[in-house]
Amino acid sequence: MKARSKRDPLDPRRDPARWEGMVRSIMVAAGPELVRLRTARGTQPLLMLTHWFRPVLAAASVVLALAIATLARRSEPAVESWGVAEVLAPEPVAAWLLVGVIPTAEEIVISMEAGGQ
Image 1 (cartoon, rainbow, N blue to C red):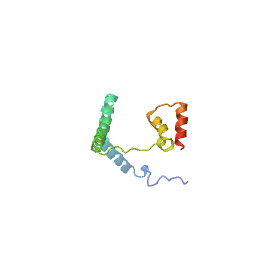
Image 2 (image 1 turned 90 degrees about the vertical axis):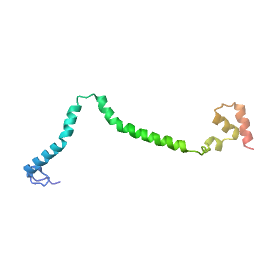
Image 3 (image 1 turned 180 degrees about the horizontal axis):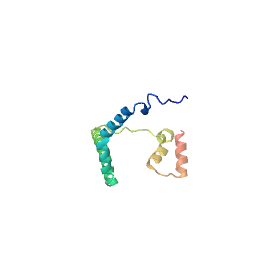
Image 4 (image 1 turned 180 degrees about the vertical axis):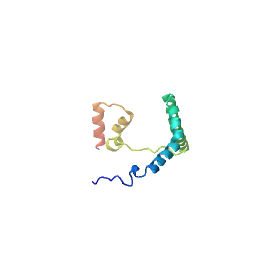
């Protein structure tokens, strides 16, 4: 990699007057924000966070309102879906699994034998 010469087009020392003019214009443009930041340092951190959270809370409330409106307009009943229990297990076992009943060993054997016929 070759080293840059002192007269590289990106070198600010090439034209000091132009460079100082650019720095001055940036500082003038940023002046009001720098003053605001200096005065904001004395405020409490919680107040600064509330200013940041206000737009986020507003956006969240809009999303919530849209979600509620969408769910309220939904008139069709929920579609019943088939789970693994209904597909792989015999009907009594699937019912036990869905309800959460713990069958006895004898009930499991009887239902498995009945499901194989």
